[in-house]
Image (cartoon, rainbow, N blue to C red; front, side, top):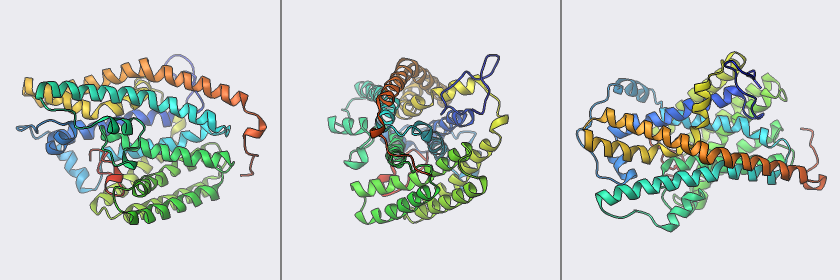
Length: 406
């Protein structure tokens, strides 16, 4: 662990994968995504927002005072939302190998299931309920049926040509693909192999390019789009084994450079034009931020508030988008003040996320960990392989690869 444990402003003892610097990134990363959706897109891309949240576009919204900052970022091809998502991806690559060190796939997938899905389902139900209440007052009907709800609930919307009810869900589908790849490598005792990680990045690059020929809207094009982002996640894996002192610094730096080059090549060949440039430039910033925090991890002070924010980052990520849009619109129609409405949406998102964290996320995560340990205890030597020596989040699959902004 990078941060000491104990009272008096120091972090409590955490599971091994709760390395402080990596955990601390989650909260700010989530806020970057919240900023993009509620502070940028709502006042500046009302047509898109209204389509996503299923309400008539608002007019008369103010020119926000932070437009100057947004303009500077846009001119330099940097998206705050994409930056947040890419930081999340690097954190996943860094922490997931901790959960795979025992190479017990049953335990790993049980733990991932309870880490991901119960919270996802509750947040999805809240979003559907908010949409239903809005429709009650505005008239109309829910723009999706049971098939779409089911596809969203199991993160397969892109694979079955169903829309995302909450567009940020696409990044979870990317994470799931990474889980499968990482778990398969760990099962064979190869996740800690530098050659395997590099070969995986090369294979994903070739697959993402080949999948383009399948055409948009197909299963293969969706998998190819998500594979592009898994390449970037693999950089986090390199940092994990550097942190564990399994790999030397020089070879780790070379491997990061190689994988980043493959990511840039794959993204640049997705045919997304300026959008590819945004993700390439923003990923450079994300990597620099992550690497910088890694280098100063031993001197990074513990913050209870940052810890709490990172703890609720997953439900906050799932709840702030469509729900935030609905709250801002409803409050704006009453107050006529965007800033008051924005404050109400942020407060509602934080309160809802905190409630879901304590009522759903914490108990289901705890149950998943207990069940995972039980399965690991029951695992016999025959069950494991022999050790080896080694802009709004828009589903990227909708365009064949890539997303707009985080």
